Length: 137
Image (cartoon, rainbow, N blue to C red; front, side, top):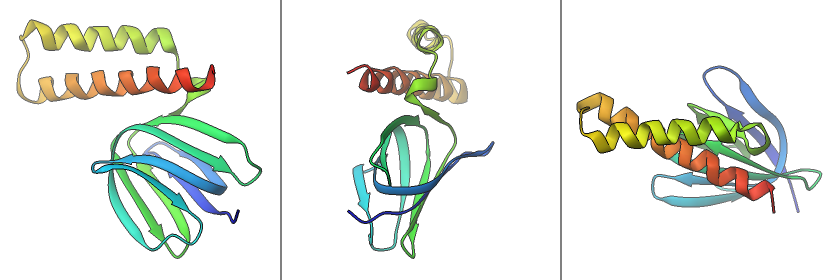
């Protein structure tokens, strides 16, 4: 299977910059899998799994948050606000943060932007927890 250049970039750093055979990610419209020679494409990304197979056949799993993917000239670049490889996720911290967000939402004491952020934090933590389960199989 042919490979292509893949970059995963957050505002803080470039998380991955190497070749890949495939990448699967969650867009706002659903999951998309990109292979070599994919047509030019731009899509907004949602919170969820970002899985890719490296050129040497290693499968990597990560949790990403909002951003966008750009496929241009055979190169794929995912620009995301946050990204963590599954093996780097602190599961205890993720569970605690998810519970804090759940309680904040359930208590109904927050509104507006605070409520939106609590809901987003809950979804990010949920995604991080789910991604860690993939490497334990």
